Length: 621
Image (cartoon, rainbow, N blue to C red; front, side):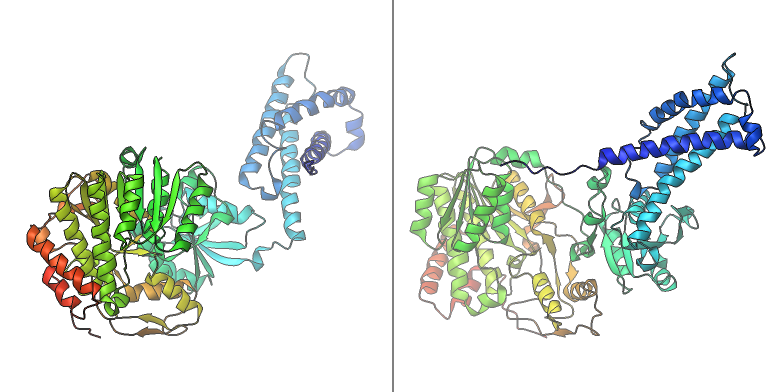
């Protein structure tokens, strides 16, 4: 098949500009002579040097065009022409005038009056500049690109990034924004102008500025600001009814990649104000590279992200193990599209099936095991407590015992903040999983550890997708309690810290991830409503439904008995393991196993006998 050829207009455009410049250069020369002869055409034509000037014009024109080329006067996109392009014209014209002036000083070569190079140079700069800027103005008029019909915009940030954004808005034919004014916290900039736009105040003036200048959209252009500063500024912006947009990552700015297409709407992650986590990538790669890695629950929210990040660290083999075939298939296809050479094995099965788990370990002998398979939905597990115990407790026990039997190097349990002083069966079952890890660590050559963290944004069952759906349906947005708070982290952040903790693992630790500041769910709901362009309790109702079975107002990250010590990563801490009576713990697990297989109604009481901190708190509104 022949490749389709497309017409390239660039050579024709360059040729047109060169011809135009030849006419403008000579027009400037003739007009300069005309001015020097007091606008007397007959007097100018009668001068003896006129013939020499005409002969010299060819050399002068060629030299001028050659000087224009390195100043990029034929490579710029003149529909975006601005101050930078005009400066190129000025510098090129100045250099041409200087050369003419120097030539005019050479004895026997003088052709002009001493003022001729200056006047002709100024005229040439004016003619060429008007031709380029005029093209842009005519193009705008033809396309109807009048600032009067654009969105009135407030730009936050008068620094380098703000200047880049402002230039994009002012010069791009795709821009729908007219920047009316700027705010910046640098007091010294107040009253100054950036590309003709006045800096009128700081962040505390945002609401007043919006009202005074009838602002419709606000663009945050401070990519170097801390996450907390961004959050504080955006919260001030949310007091207005304006649409909010922000810049891409700072590395894109550094590479000069700012474009209107890459600017994005502000989302809930910006409003949470979390700084990006930092991990030791080389340390993670060192213990994953060349290893066979098993991820249970590999199709779930956490499990699939574990697979993504593990796949980037060159494992010998990656094994996805999940009971849900659709989830497993989706992540399998995604990973193979990203890396067709990845040695990937996708297996369907349940961690509750001890024989199936045994078969996987005996065949593939995984060296690293990340156990993410679990039932996590609190209210559903309250209504099906035996299923929570079967899957979470004994599924974990099956995988842990197989890891021990087949001499895996490390076993990493994905735990939860709900395991701390649990008030629900899901949290209590995960606490037993942590106890299993500690128990196995005491008698196994395999390194067993648990990593505990809070809610992750975007996971299955997360409150944020629910809020988005409710807002799209026109409300109401349901919040269980006005004072309920939760810790949040993005899935990629949490998983990168899990992998880092795996590198730190030595002997039965419970790693606790620093989730940052807790978030009030009611505040989160209101911010999401405003981000969608609505007013809470006016356009979209917020309805308080009461705490669900097993829920509590706040989650704790660390049991009081455990203490806390730090690691190399300031976001990863280690809780001191509790002393466990091995014999008593094993006996109680056997009783629990029998009870849940019989679907005993007393299962919660038996769990409470193992997890002394499990208190089934009464539901309050």
